[in-house]
Figure 1 (cartoon, rainbow, N blue to C red):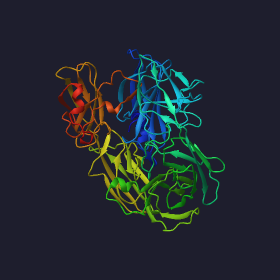
Figure 2 (cartoon, rainbow, N blue to C red; figure 1 turned 180 degrees about the vertical axis):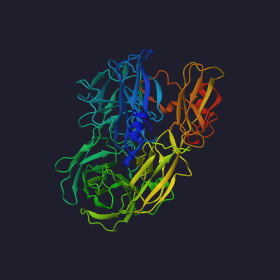
Figure 3 (cartoon, rainbow, N blue to C red; figure 1 turned 90 degrees about the vertical axis):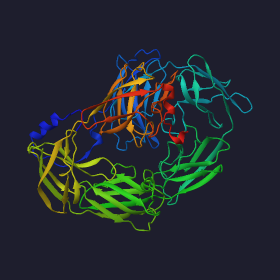
Figure 4 (cartoon, one colour; figure 1 turned 180 degrees about the horizontal axis):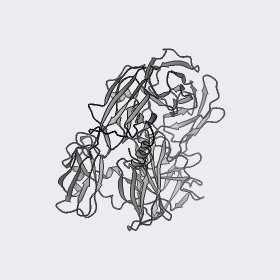
Length: 628
């Protein structure tokens, strides 16, 4: 068990009480001491105090705040990372950094912990001067045009950028000027009433000169969608959302950018009309149309006026008998199972009580809107459901083949009578152990049905799912002996007198070594990361460990599991470094042929010497074949 509470206070509480009542335990939520650290500096390396640092993670059409921090007098910061149920290396996390008197900076594709790690220096730059002029296709000035900007390359619209105020507005001569953006890679655009939005390819702004960027705006194509409901119900929350690389949500594939990154969702009026403005005259594509209680649909932007009828979502009332609901997995069975696990997985809606598609009418009655917002599968009909209760019992049911639109159907989930399990936890010497025990509860997450043994080692699961159960120690100090981790339980039966044998979890060893570059020590501390040897390689995969060398190249690194790892150095940021950096891209892309490895032993310390070639050669060592 980890966290700010630590282990000792919890143990003291256990000594004063009997076996703790069971509960649902979220393993991720206990990671309270996971941090990202770093230092904010100016271009000359001076520390920047009072800088505001924010970690965010992109999830569907929005970015979620994960933590905030302020830099101290030395520019140092330590940011506590809030857990996220759907975390993983597939999600994109980034740091936004601001400081008084400086332009903002953006550190893209930050590896979120665990493990905790130090990102190194992050530079805040003074703003650069940006000027230009906006004209129409005839060369006439466009007054009142808005200039938009975002740090780095922006491949499509996303909630990060929607409805941001413009950087500048043109005057009567079509000219504009601003000092807002940092040097480095940015994406710029312009918009004006009656004109098509113009987004430029990403470009570099320079700190040592006046940056001049002009725009030519064509007449816009304006499309009006008239949306109604087949049930004639009022459309609440009606809006059209752009489809972009980061707005994608199954079953729709990502599309190329077709609406400006600052536009965001376009709301509908009380008559069901949605005006799509600023479109390029040549654009033909689709937008996603959304309203509460209605099935999500794509509207083709082929004509200047279009009509769309939304169908009500299919409401399913899942009613549990015998236990409270914890999770549902509802499958679209209109297509046969796929040989591809990922494709097959996409045909299942995985729902918890806080899912946007769930109306939790009671602990045992969930109303689900199938194929509405938050529950998009393959667009077909639901056919089967697997359910887990809060005590780990399982239920399965088949859904009818026909639905009446707008009328909820009821699906009864009969859970077996739970079992009961009690016993004692002991170490190899026979001494009792106070420890948190868990049985995996979630079908797809990190939730556990957990209880805590007391100072005499006594534990009890008052209500637990029948069948074969594997017990785990949810405590970093202990692990359940593999010959004593499985119990067979029968519905309605109390299994008592079970002895769970736990052993102290061995402290995993460490790899210690020396890094040399072209035969010499590095001229600066070097950040090293570990990844798997057979697969899961940086920069796209998630590192298994981090460590900084000293200037002599000495390092010591650990990982969660003992095994052989690639050890991958991070390149220094490009010079001149701008306000936008892709942190993950600073690790060389490679495959299984990467030659430098370390062994993290089960215990003790391994020793190694890493002889790297010059930094300019790192990207060519084991370039993945797809990138050649």
